[in-house]
Image (tube, rainbow, N blue to C red):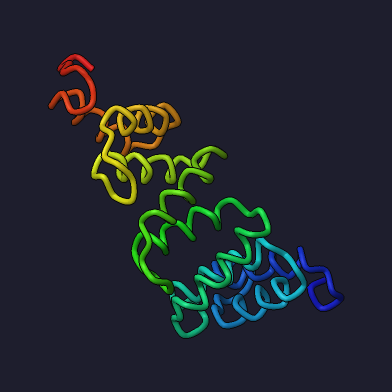
Amino acid sequence: ASDGGNLGAAINLAHCYEDGIGVEKNLQEAFRLCKIASDGGKLTATYHLAHCYENGSGVEKNLQEAFRLYKIASDGGYLDATYNLAYCYENGYGVKKSLHEAVRLYKIASDEGNLTATYNLANCYENGSGVEKNLQEAVRLYKIASDGGYLHATNCLAICYESGSGVEKNLQE
């Protein structure tokens, strides 16, 4: 099916090659298939292709190309790519570091339910990274991520309650 132009089949087959499911693991073939689907306009494939470049999976590591592809996927509305784009800006991966842009993108991804983005945004508010420090907002965001099952946020929230940082000290919480 992937030979006949079915881009969804190409993506699925790429995952099989990536994980060695039913075929011998072959990261280069996984990359090739993702590229075909990405070139055909599949944002999911563009996102996975960016991951390949970010991690050097089946292709030489290239953070600038990873960033470029995350941007294409994010601009196309693929929200996981928006989170990754924010992470690139926060850490200067493939792009000039910009904490303000990272915060802006984390907010978008967080508003759409990405708990990792919510957690990272809480960290930004807690530390004043790219945004004015606001411990109450950090606690509010940690609580959202924690309530969603994001364990790192639960730990941070516990520390906030223990130390009274951004919230009234409460050792029972």
